[in-house]
Length: 224
Image: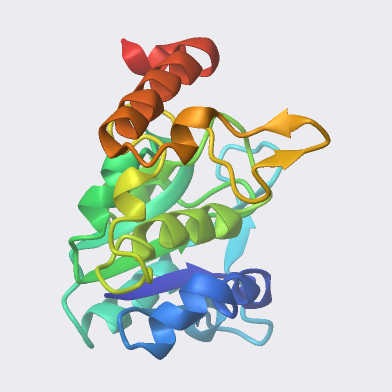
């Protein structure tokens, strides 16, 4: 998978891809993350990528010209399955969307900034808009990193245990059950006996019951 992330602040988004699972995925050749500096496609002495909004109002707006040039240049190098704009009013990002995107080959993630992008970008240049929650960030970079992380870890071969991603929270519509590790007792706090029993059918039954119980308590909206 190839993910191109368009941003006006490349340094803000570089570090998440330089460690842990995302770094290993790239080292294995399973994923490639390309950070694209939008200012490379701006014209003029100071390479502006934003301007005042027509009609007035506070805040600057990202211009359509450098964005179109950037997207067209990227598309000239490979076919992209989706051109996604990270926006607070896009569709809410979920595990099912992450699963869907993990099956794609090439993605563009456009990071908004300032007061957002010229509306014509949204009307003519992108295929999808995604939000990671009902709040506003300073830019789309952190949101793009969240989406890329959630998607890349689902690619076969990225995780050392192929079944790990399949047992994550939300994969079956429930949050994950409690987990424990050694020692079996600490300060008098004991691990549930069923997890030490070796009876896999009872363990799976316990896990499901606890996942359902936790979902009802913490995320009842998922059960609807």
